[in-house]
Length: 430
Image 1 (cartoon, rainbow, N blue to C red):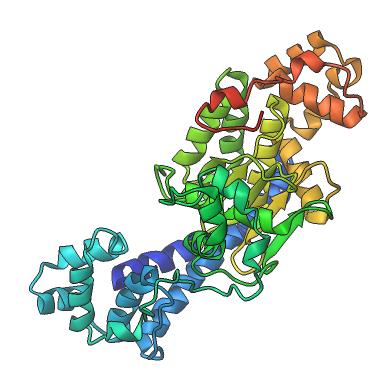
Image 2 (tube, helix red, strand yellow; image 1 turned 90 degrees about the vertical axis):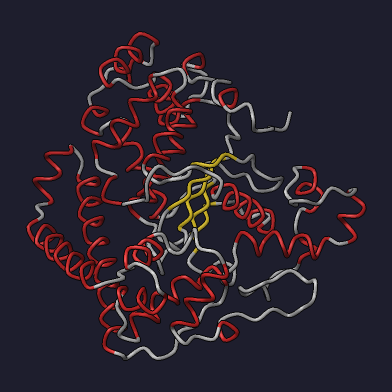
């Protein structure tokens, strides 16, 4: 979000440079450089997406500055900081002028707004709202009852359909320490509160969502699992904010090469965190048959969830790259924001595209087409190709087995039992 004229000028300059880079982008040259037309087009789409994001920020700031925006609303207290910033801009008040009115230094207001008022007390927020002539009672209302606050649209949900016993067994109901019988007796309240915490602005089911799942999947269990992943993602440490443009072919090559290390999955989790992408592991719930998922948060950053239902290195790396392919290629605000994947199921065009991109990022297509290991199917040939690419032999063995439809060959090379043990804090069903 743009908060002052200086940021406005910088953002416009960045947008101009990105537009020039987009106009000058040569898909053929990029395909030659990356070795993949799919990666080249993904790189172009990433540039175009950044231009769209910056354009929207510029439009919003210009609209606020022009005085065209006169009504600002927040559906939750989480949105109040953004409303305060927008209100200041819409009133034609600079950060310096607000600081003077508050008896503070300009740098303090700049810091507050830069961090989204995250370290600001409620009393201070109230003071700033008064300085801006805002009435907080117009922003949020509290019913006074003990019912959980539900701000999204939950009219399509039947609370009794959720897997309450399994959610209780896994300890998902925060601060609830009573018995299972007690949980069942107040299940509606517990589940409603759980969903509301994870999705305070939930939209009706299936909106902006894609699912590669079987027809017998329990969609309520799927939603519960998604909420758990979103809640866990908030506890993940992000080293920096997410920027889609950082996911270059070099970034993916470095990630793929981490697979050659015994603790590769742990390294991958840290590597994604350094790029602002939480990677959350949560075993699948009964009747979900889920491998992984990719979700887009309200701030336009992604979250990847994995179930590790198959405890194999080859599966781990393909699922991870498949979800990252969705992040690069498909997750977009207002278009596709949630994707669920059971990779045992046949996929549509979007899923086939993610499969192809994941395969190419792990083993470049031009290498795979002429790889001896693909035809010889021996431990030695697989090991030799893995050495050339600096990746785990499990990735190559897994692809050979999948492509050939032969799950007997190379069974000792797929890293069976080598993933879950790296995450001892996660409790998997025995």
